Length: 125
Image (cartoon, rainbow, N blue to C red; front, side, top):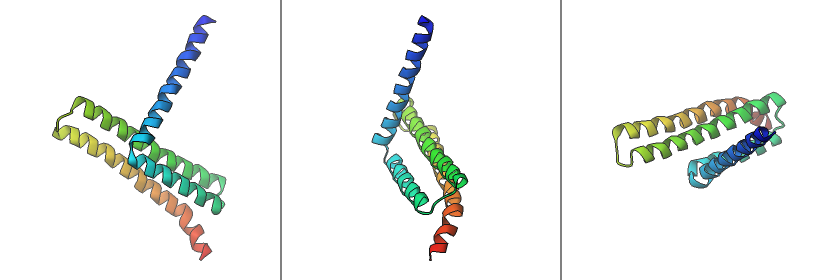
């Protein structure tokens, strides 16, 4: 029983670290705040346009993809800054590629959002 209790405590502690990471992302990264604002706007628009369950699943997956890409990009930037405080071309490339991954996720999700939202908005006019 003692082993199970320490296992549970360790898991709870790991959740604490994860929430601390999410807070660091949101509190320190302007782009994460912009993505969160987009999540709020897209969610409100989804309710207004009465999305189907399948459409909601796609929208939620896209929102998660963008937020996770932003989190991974931020982690890479923090790590690169730690190991390479002075400018190095490879450090710059690592940061650029990570930022590019965020941009790709936003562009792809923009396509999905457009496929879902544009026909519904078009009908309103």
